[in-house]
Length: 161
Image 1 (cartoon, rainbow, N blue to C red):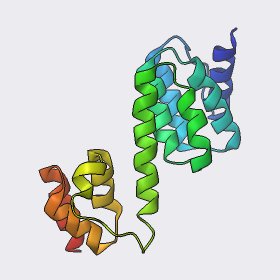
Image 2: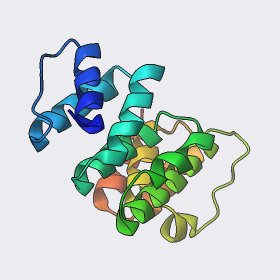
Image 3: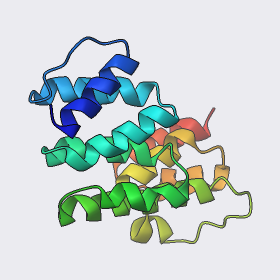
């Protein structure tokens, strides 16, 4: 058994799952999803190893994007570098940037400059902020200047609560 298969078998065992076919994309994704729902230090370390060996770039990227939201900022770069191709690394880097902005916007002193939404905030970040923010300034800005109707509507509804 190779290292990838051994790592997946260990993740499956930790999750109380039986044997998985490590060659089946659907089974690997199910295992990764279950692992992400129950992360601890050991599972995170094993997942880090598995992502580096994952041969499906879409699956690897999906795992990394989800992990980026729950790990400390200092660890994000190493996860991004586990991705095999430049396009995935660029996408994950952009998401890490968005997550940093999202985290910084929890600080009460953050001022939202006019036009900042359109220039710097991805749609992912805007919908997250429209859903999660409690800052009336941000919600008002998104309700007026969000890049999609969904973002503007969500921010307006959240502002009205």
